[in-house]
Amino acid sequence: MKQAEFDGIIFTDTLLDYNSQQYTGRIIHILCQEGNMGFTFQETRYNIAAGDYVILPNPALVEEFSESADFRGIRMNLSATFVTSIAIRSNYGIIGHLALLQNPVMQLSSRDFHVCREAMLYIRKRLEDKEHLFQEELLGSLLTAHILDLYDIHARGKEAMQVSEHAASLLRRFIELLYKGEYIRNRNLDFYASALCITPHYLSEVCRKISGRPASYWIDRFTLLEITRLLRQQELSLTTIAEQLNFSSVSYFSRYVQKRLNRAPSDYRKDF
Image 1 (tube, helix red, strand yellow):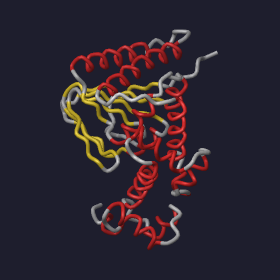
Image 2: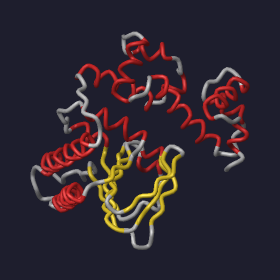
Image 3: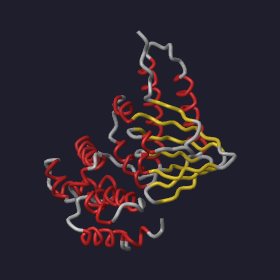
Image 4: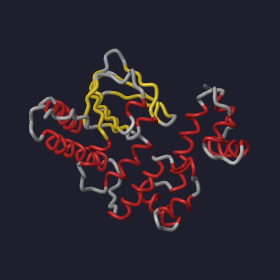
């Protein structure tokens, strides 16, 4: 019987024709070797140079890729399902994940650059060995080693932090609720605390300890990302957007945006 095509790891030649829909459920890794590239992530423009490593945990938040004529890099995109299946036994992942949502770029030392480059090239080489009877398990082991190296690089650049399994699981479930779009229906902290069977205070304290931000910050962050995405679609009226996001009125929607972006929705829209 013919073996199903493995799509847990895919290397791509370019991201210039990037379409966020085709990357749904995937995680993008980019190692810049020469030249430079850029992209917009969560309303912030990033310019990437040689020696930078980019991890985009939610490609739906990425826009406007650009590359210089002399750009050379390794672009690897991973299935989130495959990454979850390899079950890395470390709670550091949730710390790194939240940090990447705030800044997806790591600047590597020459040693770390060499380690990452060799690991990615070797994964790509073994990906071509389709006759290997245990290819998926092999690739899972190689990817695990690479991700643990990335954890090590990231952790060395941050203050050491120990996170209990309970706290990591709690925060992971909270962020999963947001990724699933629960913020469209519920923006009240009490809802998330109730869904996780804890108090609002405890949820905020766990979020603050691990990410440096309270839970309300992450609820607003996901909400504002969706609001700004919709506002850029000029054909959508403010009434339509307010209704799609379950605001009780356009005036309440406008106050919400004004308070958090320091400008009215109509003013934000003028820039696009």
